Length: 391
Image (cartoon, rainbow, N blue to C red; front, side, top):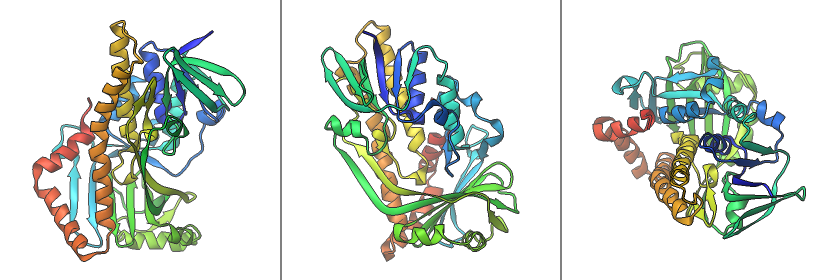
């Protein structure tokens, strides 16, 4: 009977990154997913651009994925500004206040997914079960047994769930999770513009909606609109010319004339945080552990931080000739990653609630928060360090 060191359910970017990270540490891995290898090697454009921190770049480089990303698609984020309503005042982050040449990078989501899959497809220590799903699994002191919907049964020492915010694996293990439904929809698209963006990212908290404008390569940007879900259809159905003029006006014509350059995509907005990230021979990673609101761009970066932590702990145990899958080892992962995620998760939700509230005290607190963030250097430095740290 062939028995893998680790079985991973889910082939999203975090699950695949974990597979490669573990393979590099000499673990045998089996990845299970409903998609085909062809789908994962050339995923379609989905409108989403992912902000990558320097720490995440280091991880992607370590697993051999960074150099597989088309360099012409990577945009550098030099500055970031947070704007409240139509006020000219902004909370401002500048790479010149750091020891790096950029705050981070903006990369199309489908390019990241393709690069990560390309790094694992010919890896002899990684088995990919395509067009498969877990029908059921059983965990006992002797190991993990996963029955696929095809009838095949596979065995392993450790099971890792990377199957999303509404993880079925997490539910089957009886791990509770907080799910916060914001009642909103995110609409994303690509736009052309006539004035250089100077690699500045904007997050504009307008009343009733949020508008993020993120610099892409050349005179293009990614536009991210967050609105109450009952307003989303009107925006999605809007004529391209009307939509483009509306965005340019809402952005105070900072980029001059703007025109839509892609299809509009929409995604329901909710966040989630598991009560704990481990059980007997079982661990949660990526959105199955914590699914973030996109406003602070921490989702994928936290996912990569989690797989870096998990790989390090498992590898330390294996290098010491100890069972890597023990609950004590997984508890170390849980404690470390919970410390990394909880403050960010609840802090982000608090920021979102504050900046979307129409109450008078909230409007005052928004103005105060921006000035506090700008003028209290330790707070500002802590935020920038999180973007630019590499380890």
